Image (spheres, rainbow, N blue to C red):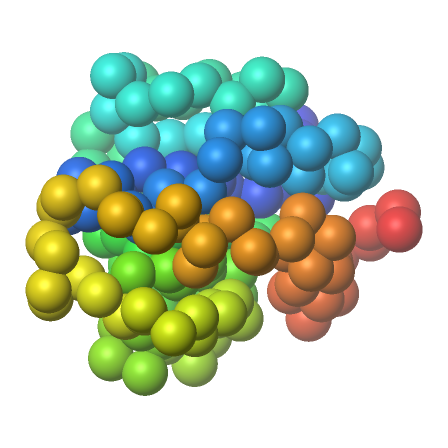
Length: 163
């Protein structure tokens, strides 16, 4: 990771619920909004690729991904296994919650973004079925608020970041 500046490890996919996902256009806008950062996308090869990130999907074993978590400057992603692993390594991150709640699944090392719309959390009720209400819980999370949270977490690591 040494050759990269302001590394942001990114995991955009959850196997437990399609309702954990944030729109791909917003991920791409986030990368464009943070040109001084190097986004490294991890996950499985069949997960959507986010343009502008280094594509390491399917190129790391679990142990390698944990090593990346240990050495990245910050993390951004959805409520998933890698978001939870940040806690084990003390990596400050940003985690997007929609159909699940950070009250139950969030960690103190992360900025947990959650809109608490009237139908959320619904994870235990609808499981992995698609949202019948337009996915408001994730769609209302704004790129600018995620950008600000990522910058805050990078600053907490004393990393030189261009705002």
